[in-house]
Length: 325
Image 1 (cartoon, rainbow, N blue to C red):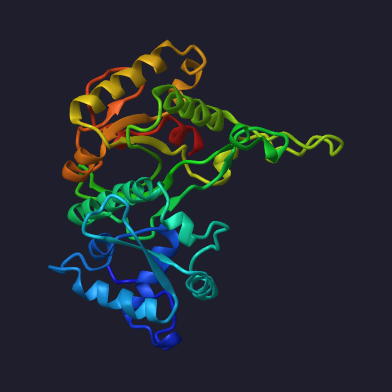
Image 2: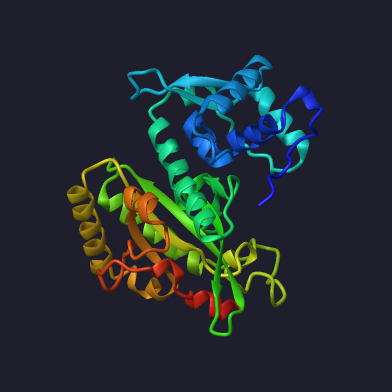
């Protein structure tokens, strides 16, 4: 797959690799040199070339680094500066984001969560390369807001669903007649590093269930819209089918993560409010370790609802895909 060009090669004297690094850092907020190497130069045997380019970008005021809090060796986490954000946004290749990484945010306790989100995306990218599928360094987007309730936007969590990441993936299969079939898959991804209560994780499933059935209503005094206006669920304006939900667990031993999975399934099974939406949700749980080792389409995903046997549930046709067709 050819590498995309994000900026004019003459802009600020950046190399081709420098031009690739900036948009990836802009979108994914914090990345190590190792993650950038795996994303942009997977054949490289060391991070030396990437680190050299990061130093050039740093000298031009486009990127900065913070020391990783958990690293005894002083590993650096890289992010775009305000000037770097402006350069990316002026290129017009990425939609501008309101959120910008700051020095304080880069040094905060959110470091490991951000890196875990990016490790999840990296796992998809690496397995897409192995399978001949399509998923690149810019194919996941962190914290995209989705309205789930009408009314005052100041309701915060009550009004919006904000997945840790929205990831897009094109999976290619070969049919019985030898013809290749391409399946566009979209995932709502949540990362839990064993820091979130199971009750809060289950509450996120409620938000996804609300979004699956949320149909916007007209503002008071503006009359009822014509057919096709507010009559359909809000997600249909963004996605061809309702995204699959992947809950990725990390930050504890395999046995502890297995217990968390069982507890989440028990809460979901006992929740009468969640059952009506069960048919609309393809939701599964996997550990980050197994995702990275086996890939997203191996039988490593435990369904949140129904049979507890790990499966390749992420590849099964979506019920909402059929209804949206």
